[in-house]
Length: 260
Image 1: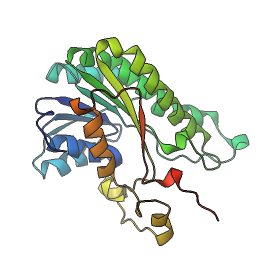
Image 2: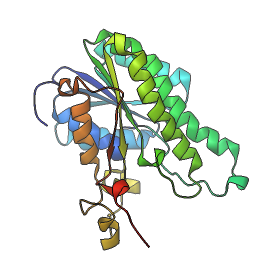
Image 3: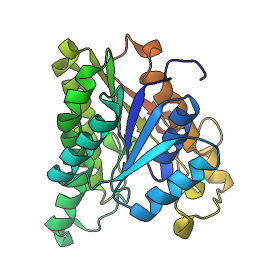
Image 4: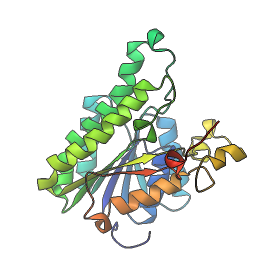
């Protein structure tokens, strides 16, 4: 997607230092947006800025743990002081490891932490980002959910519940913020390979078997670019008639019947 829509627009991406978030940051920066990434991982954030600067792309990094209300409030204050308003808020930050082990042995502190970041943190960003979104002529919120909101492997209940909450939050916010001219949508990614999009200390070379690829109707595992292209569309004026929707981007994996 290449047009002039994002010139002078400000886009905030939570969890933007690695993985899907970094892929989106790169895509929006290439379109000329003022990109702000926030992440709790300072090492990853600084590396992300360095990586994008090598491509002559401009991006700001602000460290923030979105589960902490006071940190989110400060984050939005800093964005407002520099850019005054916010055209797009992309809620991507989340604890990615979905597996928790046996329910009976689960520590509630682990469950609470996942919900605090993945769901409550998104609510906090929407709450404190709202004044900046209201200043824009047309604002957009994009929540990054997961196909695990609709289907599960064993012992992934906290992650699945948090992503299911994001799905419900999406349509609720779309109706609640309609009078503010703020559209709210979600993307539910499937298997997205992020090995090359991690900080240097955690990067790995992706290796996918034939079976891995053939689980997908398109014959391959997804990449951050796949999600980034859709996010560019959903946050732009080209998607002006789309709100309250969740788009699954999984290469057809969740609609393909697989028999063992």
